[in-house]
Length: 562
Image: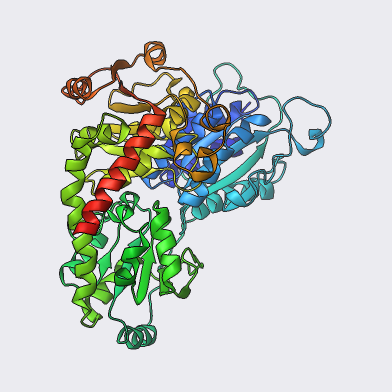
């Protein structure tokens, strides 16, 4: 017999617009699994590996901007969700995590599949709730419904994020034969009426007075989804020479009016004096570029951060003002009220930008074949409508070096781990018929191979695998690069190729070891097919490090000569 409050829980989820659930097999979670699987308005999928399941749900929620439900059984299953839960927390992605549990009297009594599950995700969820384990009174039923409503509201409120409900369940777990599920048509549901903080006229007056002293403004957007309204504001500010906009690829706000190649020169302190702003304005989440962060920390310039909830984010160590408002509101106001700026400041930035924009393609074509020049070729073939997922380490950095992209960029920069990149991209394919491209290194790819262990079709998935048979980024970090243990203990050299994985999971597979093979492989790589595709680009870790150094040296020479 399935207890009615579990059916009510699922009905409330559906009523509040949740349409997708990712379920992992187990017995203790059977009441939850069956309720989600049988609800007519919820699309339930089953993913056996909980770590992969959670990243798949993350990939879906990133696109849907709605919570996706996760359901697992008791015990270590819940712990396998943790990497994706932490990523969702720092990336501000809504998830509703339902972990089945034993009743409290059986915890720590050597009964099977028991751990301490209440609040198991600690500070990496917005809230944790404990579902009642008995429903003998109407108050307990009311309490259960109240928890579900509140949990969903919390997951959606800014900043969005994961919320956990631990659900103790008593036997029996399974319905009787022919037992029907009666989902309430009108579950106990209450709505949240939310509002956004706006800057008062008095606050704007003070800000305007402060801006009258400013002549060199640098705006730095962090990671966020594409936003045409914000893009228009930034482009207007740049075109009217009111601010310099510096954009990493993950900001999804790059254009011909923004600075996109800053990683090529900000590491050189020779350029810093003429690039130093009077004021830094930031919004969004993290940036990729270490050289950008170090430059902004060294400038000592005042820093304003736009953060609707008013929480301090002092990334550049000189925070002087938090603007508790939506970024479009302030950027619109800024474009209308900012006084005339120093045109030489923008000219300095754009002189460097145009030099790299002109020289980089020629440099990439002049060096030996390797990951960086290979991605230069690949990037020209990725459809503009493709969602572009980037694994951490070198994949996201190469794309950032290459500059402006037209695709939406998705990368797990909340915790910046390599785990879950494949799964997040798979989750994305469940939400769109457009191509989904994953650019990944071999360590991240093979680490998350269970992303493809499921029964669902993903014909729109395209994987660009950079296989240098090692963790190549460690050759570019001074510390490990100088150690005799580099290859065995940092790079972790391996001889795997993706051809066997492709055969096992039904991918079309092609390998490229040189420019000619890559150009042939790309001719029909994005043609529609009934199977997903993997393009494996094989190279040498040591050679890639040398190529990157050569490219940096040639671009630096062009910059110093400009």
